[in-house]
Amino acid sequence: MAYIIDGHNLIPKVPGLSLRSADDEMQLVEQLQEFCRRRRKKADVFFDGAPAGHAGTRKMGLLNVHFVRQGMSADRAIEIHLQKLKRAARNWTVVSSDHAVQTAARSMHAGVQSSEDFARLLSETLRAAPKTSEPDDQPVIPKDEINEWLALFGEHPEEE
Image (cartoon, rainbow, N blue to C red; front, top):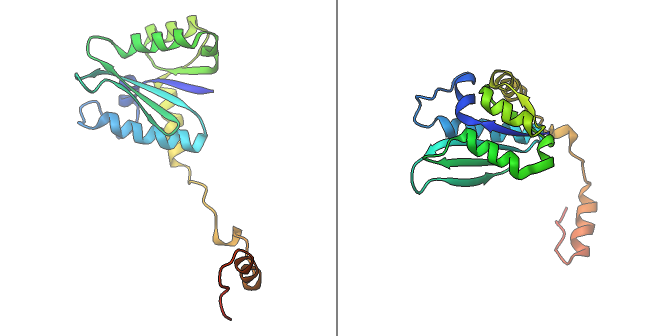
């Protein structure tokens, strides 16, 4: 299931983030990108109050970041986004503790998760050690086999 996130509603719930920070949105975006990568989930995050010339959507891996123009709320942009999804909205979970946003999500049959619950999931996911491949996991290819492949492709095999 993919996520639609009310960004400014989530920021104060995430440990270490604050709406008073000048780069609060980008700090959240970085965490969400890593979350999406580790969980292999798509997400759309909405931030309202974008100054003129900065509104729009930016794709960052599995994360779409929507900067909503001034004069329109992220809440309204999320509602419009859900309406555009039509029946596919049921495949999305809306993350917000705003009751109006939750009501709009439920009316479109989307899932709902509070910002507090999602912040816990985000923190747990980011705290978990990333999966890395250990050198022992790497296959060992004998030097003569490498030289055979190099010769086959017209390269000069290494001298032993």
